[in-house]
Image (cartoon, rainbow, N blue to C red):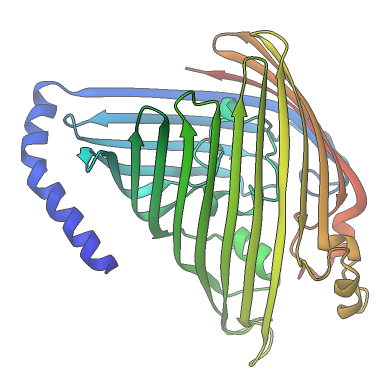
Amino acid sequence: MNKQVFVWFLRAVLLTAPSSMVMAQEEPKFSWHGYIAQGLTQSIDSDFITEDNNITGELSEVGINGHYRLNSNLSVAGQVVYLDAGNRFEKGTRLDYLFVDWTIPDVAGWQAQVHIGRFKNTHWLYSVTRDVPQTRDTTVLPQSIYFDGFRDIALGSDGLQAKFKKYSTDNIWEVNWSYGRSPLNDAQRDFFLGDDANGSIEQDFVHQVSAFWQPATMAWRVGVSWLESDFGYTAAQEDSRLDGGASIRRFMFSMQYFSEKWQFSSELVRELQEYNGLFAPNYVDRLTGEGGFVQFRYLFNNRFSGLIGYDTYVNNDNDPNGEALEISTGGLVPSYFGYMDTVTVGARWDISPRWRLQAEHHWVDGAARVVSLLDPSIRDHSQEHWRMWSVQLMYWF
């Protein structure tokens, strides 16, 4: 079925390509934008961002994105970024997205778009904008949903995506579907399996679907999403891990509210995880993680705003305090690595139309998102109670 969809789409592109190329020669429509963000940051009593409680300038983001319209229905969009965020994810340049955008004006009253290539994840509240600093409410997003260790995997995938919108007098409906896979680097492998794993890990597929509703006033936005993904691991000749795989099934509820002076956003997640092989020939483990966040932003005026939020996550809903985790590992993994609760306070100052200064402070209990549970030195990576903060100046054009 998936192969048939790809064949159908490619035929459609080939049929429209000649005319679109002529129009592009006659009247090319190209636009580009970018951003530069630099700041200071620190994690205290944890290695989540920095080590040894150091204050660092490893809070750099530079991005260039472009959009080229071939004709009224066909265009190409892409973005290249450079990131340096301490230990949160791998430092360097990456292609965030590059896809063909085919707009279909009307399908039974629905407006439709089809993306093929490396598309962006449109299924969560902030997934489609998390790569652009001036669109984020905080530099470090709620880790229960937007886990930085998997930033590149969650941002988008290589494959096919379809988006549908329907506008009526009273309602706005949006339905999104996507199927693809993302390349994984060694840093992501190490977070899955610990840094003593030497083999190769691949995402076999990620299948997502979401639906959102808004009233015509657009004051509310409510939605649900479903993710299904499988991963496979091939052990190296000399390896502490065995061939195996993992499956993840994630269900989410999302909600936003906008008023003249304040904004509210919240997402809840329930994640089913299954592991096979990897640690022993017949090893099987199943657990359910769950969590979510609530966040309020108050606008004092059109230049200043403040934010407060709460984020929580547990690795295993049957062991919310991590006590069974510590017992099962003989004390090697402290119980507080089974959960993570975060209180956030932030402030934003729009200095001018294209300049912004943003600051935040997080107080954290637990360390579920700090480092892989399989890291042999896990106890050294975080205390039970720790903090992190950042101040970042950003400019966009």
